[in-house]
Image (tube, each protein chain N blue to C red):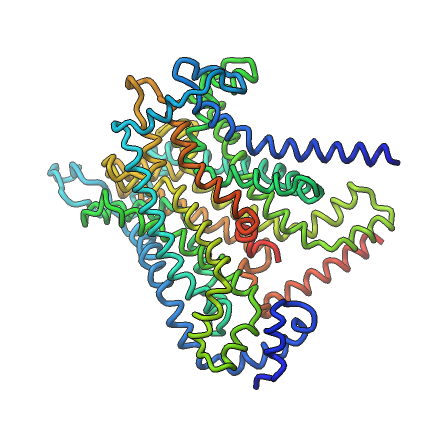
Length: 350
Length: 277
């Protein structure tokens, strides 16, 4: 089934041009031919990864759920004996969060939510601005790309310590604003400190992803808009933003899921068991390190469900898969939708 | 007309300068602070008044055990990277080249696992590892780290393999190679830069890990560098040794920064893989 012209395409080595056009039918016929035999090969190649992920992710997750149904070792209130094993308590650990003991959970829940919303919002603003500057800048692009990777490369734990030094009562932050703020003590300023540090570290990531999205927008679109008399602002709102939206949404999704599990930064910048900054990850880790595995597991499961729901919501919003595979029926439907949306928009503006 | 163009160019330069300053200023402050002596550590001048390597000497004083921590970090993140890459290369090849049922579902699942909150894996594993006596071992840090490094590697490599033209292996297979041989002799050498980039990104992810390393260890001799630095002790209990923390921070970050500077183009390509279609 393979035509003789394929080696010439391979010899050319570079994709695009005539090779790109020719490869489409070859691909289609190869698919039909490959399926039966490649199924077994694929199973062989994929199963080790699946096995490892089952052991390190799936099994612990199931175990966390089971663990969350058990209480802590210690005095059994009914019998008065000290039990060596953890008693089965059913959904008690979950019910507890609605009782008096739940205050710490809800505080952590709102902290997590607050940090996620505020940091991702700020990061999006700063990241998009960075991407626009990088996209326009021709001189100094290498410098900017190198420097933008620095915050990303600094370990979060180190950045936590660095910002604790910056926000020290005698540190540079107070020297710059000319006031004495005790940033790392309990209070709203502690939240601000965490947000500033987090935004610094992660905005460049959004900037990079958005820049990648900007670079695939064809120049002709802007030229056409300019001919039609669209100013820079109109160009941004009507062309740049809609076209860069898929890349931006993916970036925002990643950042949201990452912010929801925030741990290192508040833990090192402010400290453990501080109400103002305790996140769900910190709460679960703290309970687990105090051998209260039952409640810890319950918090971990709830955080997992929270992350899962947000991810699900985003996938619905994106209307597509993140995998971006070889264009199944889903992708086609999406394209159609986009086309109708575009034509609808054109009609509306006309 | 030319005035506006000039004005715009200046504005752009200003934008570039502010982005660079934004990214580098805190890092620069870490560097400057690490070079101050203990007596002028609270100095807020932008240049160190007198360069002192006192903090760097303090970092390597035997009481901090920092050299050992660096070695631990290297062992944990190195092993994690090698294992993840070994598994991910095969899986990613299958994802990029073979057609099989549930491919999309499997790839989505693999990527989804990297979104899991690490703490929901750490809590049950902490209990398990306590029971089987794995606390304070390397494997107690390597195994959970695989949960986020492996999906990352699979995704990156899948994108790299997809970018390579199909014709490469087809030509090799026409010339009589089996698929396995084509993979080993044609794909791997050509994909080497992509594999290398993935290795760097995976290594950085594993190197920067904190929560697992913190939870799974309590003995200083097994702690990784980030955990060790966070537990540095000063002259007194209440004296936070900022100087040596900054110096150690510089030492931990500089290898990454150098890698990033050398391979910036590739790393950016790897990080944005899959995001922009």
